[in-house]
Image (cartoon, rainbow, N blue to C red):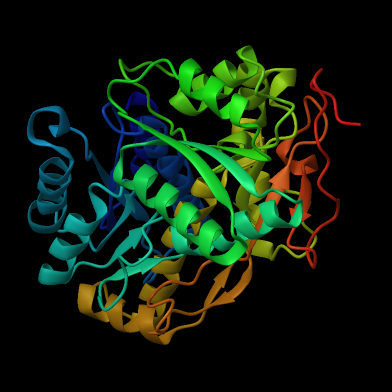
Length: 412
């Protein structure tokens, strides 16, 4: 939480008089994914800096942030009550113009419903597939579960995988992701699944389930662990499952895919996974620092992020940056700092983003949701950086073919 609030204070200390107030409502402590709050706050900070260095908003006004940890009372009252309480303060006490940072599927629908009732524009950062549908106030520039699942399973089918071992947590995201992966894999590709679900707040040891998966002789393994772990601590169960899979010999002989892009933080990934984690695949935004198609605003973000933090920006940071700069552009079009004027501009304007022009439409598939193009990435060399990772799927965007790992962690 301290790391996230440091980013917020860095913005607010130079916001000046009469700033545009934007709320950040994200998990910043256990029992939520506290790293999400840090990543969102970093991206939002750079969004505020970009607007300030490019003339400000509505006659030179800067952005300031009011941030709340949506896990503040989650242990006592549950996720939804804790998050909605934070949203109520932002909307009715602090009177922010807009909000970003919602991450957990266990909080986002309730917060979105409140925003809809009181007319507060909100940008969602998570993978919930339908939370924007039919709502006027909810927007998203990130990808959903429904966006990533076909890509993931089509990729596994493309490399010949038909028997899929899977471990998934009992969170809303974990179960929804696993259910959608299994349904798509079975119906589209005739895949077989050996799946084990676990209690997020209890499980610490998955060795027995991993041994059963190994004995079943799968063609691929889906590690559905998340960034949080029973008992707290800085390392998520995604890494614990990975390490135990290496320990019992499931990895690296069996190809592993994960459900979100934690390997993109390559320094952390190799420190925690070691050579046995080579060959990992993950769904990701078609983005990396060396991407030649990046627009000037994307180049500004990428260069500033790497200069400040020393590593390539995760797409969560990129999403929060995009949300803040879109709010700034929409206010310029609206010519007013009212919520209603902002909503009108968000629905009618084309925005400059890192991937080119972006609009929000009320489409049947993507209502107020404009996701980026997605790819499957793979580390093919131990110690490889995110910027050098291979794109292996879809074929039209791939710069390398899938390469299976050998038992010593190196790729042939």
